[in-house]
Amino acid sequence: MSERKAGAEAAGKVPSGNLALFDLDHTLVPFDSGMAWIRFLIRRGFLPADAEERHLAFCRLYVAGTLDIHAMHRSNMQPLLPVPRATLAQWQREFEIEMAPCIPAPSMAAVERHRANGDLCAIVTATTRLIAEPIARLFGIDELVATRPATVDGSPDAAFTGEIDGEPCFRHHKLSRVNEWLAARPGGSRTSLAEFGRSWFYSDSISDLPLLAAVSDPIAVCPDDRLRAHALQSGWPVLDWACASAGC
Image (cartoon, rainbow, N blue to C red; front, side):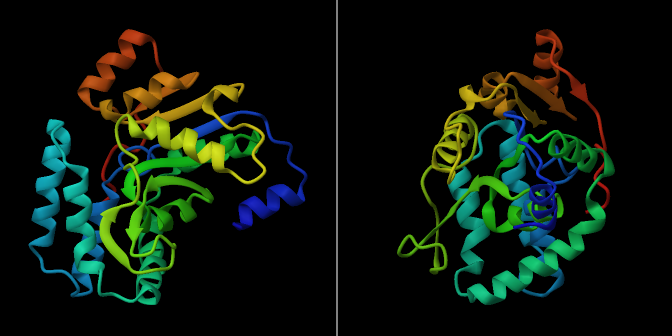
């Protein structure tokens, strides 16, 4: 349990019955967390310098709307398969420390406003959980709906296979993965998106349109051109907070 969550419970904070969902890359943080992770591993001499260009090629496919997320996941995970899980956990902790100065104040403030209101907060991202977890901790968000790396026997601490466990948290699957997460939450009184009084989703990408359309309060953050046009036409709020890369 995070210190923020423990503090809220100690203060007897009453849940609001509302839900706040946040995309990660180019929404909460003004950069691609997968690229930040690859650069982190390059600096440690674990990956060759050309790993950055390989990742950029996948990013271009994402922008073009033709990304095969399974191929991208395999590319990111394959070099990590021989690495002991304890080593990966240490790298995650070091990555978290390096990313701390890169968290924009406006996005942190938005998370804090929802938390102060008693809203259930979660990050919903196509990024693999291994990379997203350290950044989620920086925001004090315990709930993370991300692309899950598959393991050899299905247990969370087993060796990775390089494949995706279940559906990727990507495009229309984000909506189904959110409802899957809500239905499985221990002690959760609301088991689907429709059961919340209000629900927000903050995102930068047109690929997130299915989940944006499913919440009561969709918010476009530093949106791509197609999402900006759709948001303006639909009367959705458009926030241009901390859109610069922050050098991370």
